[in-house]
Length: 245
Ligand code: CDP
Image 1 (cartoon, rainbow, N blue to C red):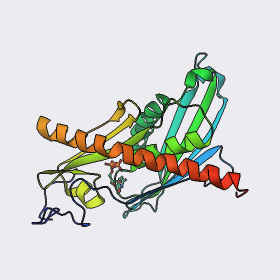
Image 2 (cartoon, rainbow, N blue to C red; image 1 turned 120 degrees about the vertical axis):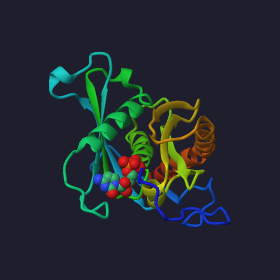
Image 3 (cartoon, rainbow, N blue to C red; image 1 turned 90 degrees about the vertical axis):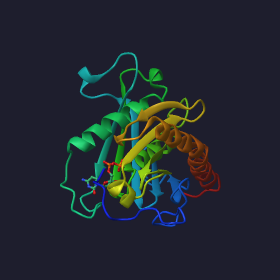
């Protein structure tokens, strides 16, 4: 969270800098099957975010001492391209991307039937090509589509959204300015069938009441986001059926 600044993020009519109302999502588009070599893939465009998720596996885990005899290991690797942000991002893993990779791996593992693939590994590469805000959630939401595109058995999708607090108000799906100059950012991801939470992090401060408001806004948006994930897959299947790529 940035420090409080003079930038006014919500105007006198209650509208945000990009014209959205507090409960509106940024434009969201997902396309499945965008890479030919990967077992599964997806491109998500969410606000100004452009992120590709590529899935490989399940395949034998290597090195062997990493294998789990009871289940597949899920390894997500979140990476921001050097040109994805205003100030060049130094290439390679940093503390932030290592942390994000860990929480995304855990969230995805809870959605996959990992027990069906002992000793295997499922790799999920998340490449942020253009970053706006909410890239971990957008990357996770895309990864779940890519895993389904790879035909890997899943209990459910993982579907996420963020909410936060800007100019003292709780709003859904923070933009970059809101993320930088707001007072709190709360990314949450769930398995939408039973709303089980598989990722929750918070940056900044919210009162209990604001936290409840933020979580209900997110839960209200989850079915819409999940619908977009599902239609990305069904359009992919339609293209395949009609003899397309
Ligand atoms: O992207 P997300 O909101 O999940 O994570 P964050 O750590 O809260 O980062 C918020 C935003 O800050 C990112 O989406 C990027 O636009 C920006 N950022 C950046 O400009 N340079 C970095 N090295 C990391 C993040």
